[in-house]
Image 1 (cartoon, rainbow, N blue to C red):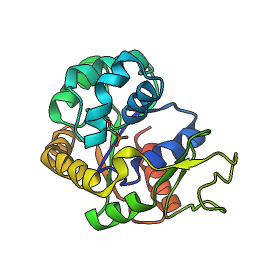
Image 2 (image 1 turned 90 degrees about the horizontal axis):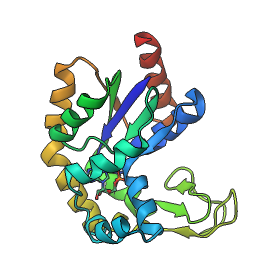
Image 3 (image 1 turned 90 degrees about the vertical axis):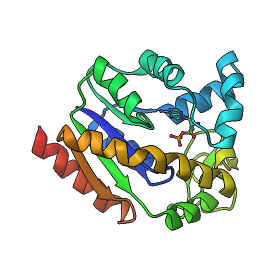
Length: 206
Ligand code: AMP
């Protein structure tokens, strides 16, 4: 099963991909996370792209595609964060056949609220937000690690990321609707309800 998640930043696509990974045992590939790893490791690539991520801008199609190609499993994956535009979708189509595209819809208002609340454990990577919240402020409930805000979750940067998304998101949805592999869910519905809808859809195309 090869699945792509579309949606605005903080729409919940990463959360859904992570839940499905646990349920279906299919690897979750997040291009944003691949890039943040490079930045954390301070690799030459990480140093080059850090300012772009900080400003909420996209990195070039060819660069992100080369990063992705090295990490993309052959048969099964849940891809989150790629493609971001039609050109990237066409690049992906040249190397693999996607079974389903899940578009997670969410209003800008909710996205901004979520951005203000999102924190990630620097140790185990667990993500907290409006749901779930950590039991103790600033401390990971799972491993007691320190919780950090993502640099690109500050509100002006989130607004920039939403603007970048608006420019391409609809074209991308149209691209996949034409290929009849497009499915949309409402990212403001309860997390488990959204997950069930996606699982039902996956079952129906198996
Ligand atoms: P995300 O975690 O998916 O919100 O991505 C965080 C940031 O990584 C984005 O704001 C971009 O700067 C960069 N990025 C992630 N995926 C892509 C992509 N497919 N194309 C270009 N830039 C990307």
